[in-house]
Image 1 (cartoon, one colour):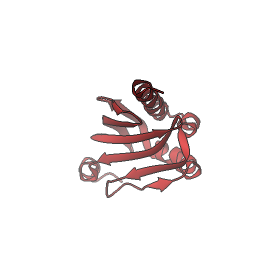
Image 2: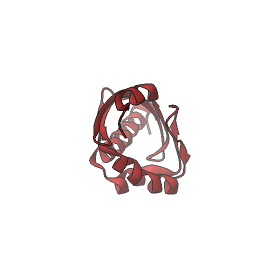
Image 3: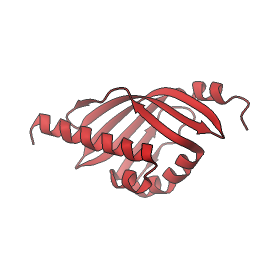
Image 4: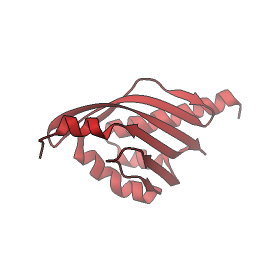
Length: 133
């Protein structure tokens, strides 16, 4: 595959994955990650995990906790099998609206998301949700 073909395939997988998350489509999102998927969170409040099965178990709870979760993609920057996606995340947490900017970094292998790193400001989340119980 040419480098431009690999970049296009990477973009397609990443966008399809984020579209599935935005739609609350757990089955499709899980199908788009690798068996040994590494979901890495850099935020103090984030919880990283490894493996498609662990992701399948956690994702429904995450989507239920962050109601109406939506990642508005600001850009999709691709280089071969890697992508960087700045986003604005909106959701309702315990009924309270939340809006946070962040960045995903992806590595795609064999048509699946192999590694996802999520960079977001947990202090901003705490500021926006202070007093919500």
